[in-house]
Amino acid sequence: MTGPGRGLCLGAAVAVGALAAAAPALAEQVCIAAPYAGGGGELADLAARAVQVVAGFPSLAEALAEQKPELCLDDTLVEEQAYFEPAANRIVIRKGLDPDFQLAVIIHELRHLEQFGRDICPTIKLRLDDYVRSRLALEADAAAVSLYVTWQLRAAGDAGPWETLGKWPTHDDLALSFETEMAASGDAVKATSAAYAAWFDDADRRGIYAFVGCSSYLDALDLAHMEPGKGRVAETFLPTLCRMPDGRAYDCFLPP
Image (cartoon, rainbow, N blue to C red; front, top):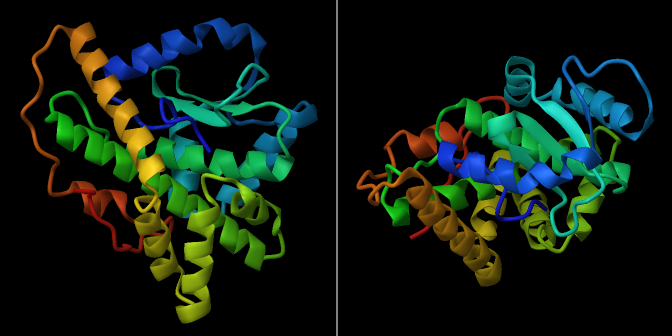
């Protein structure tokens, strides 16, 4: 969904790099600020729909209300469908996508916004391996939670966002894992755990994100003129990260 280089809650030095990389495209962006009211067209419709949807998912609604990111459309994105830019407090979505898919990807990015607000983002104070492992966990969580939310929307009669994720190459296997667990147990918490675990089963997906995480870490060290960190992932990281939007915990892990 999102490109592996952006769309995660990043450490400050990496966020600056992402902002610089995005700068040439700003002229092609159209943005709307909180409270996302008024106007018309593709962006206004997306913002209004997103606000309405997340109202039913407390942690996402709280993140949106408290952090108030700009919501933007960008017609210059090619490989990325969306990304969250912490330094600018901006969520950018590719213009012209199917509206149901736009909603699905903005839910994914709102989960990254929520992660950022929980102050659990990896920094270069961590060892490289722990930095990369925690970034992978953040991405798996955002994917799993976006599937949970779109599944709930489908149950309420709005199947479009779920169906678009189920057909998307980076999420089709995750959607299958979620749906299989729902058929077996009917338990959305277990299904979210299954989707989270399935995220790590694809070696290509895992490898791409690990490579980009490693590169981001090394670039950030270079910018900060720092030696590699020696910190380890906090014991509170997973309990803080792996919670459903209503606060229930789901099973998760750090990849080896």
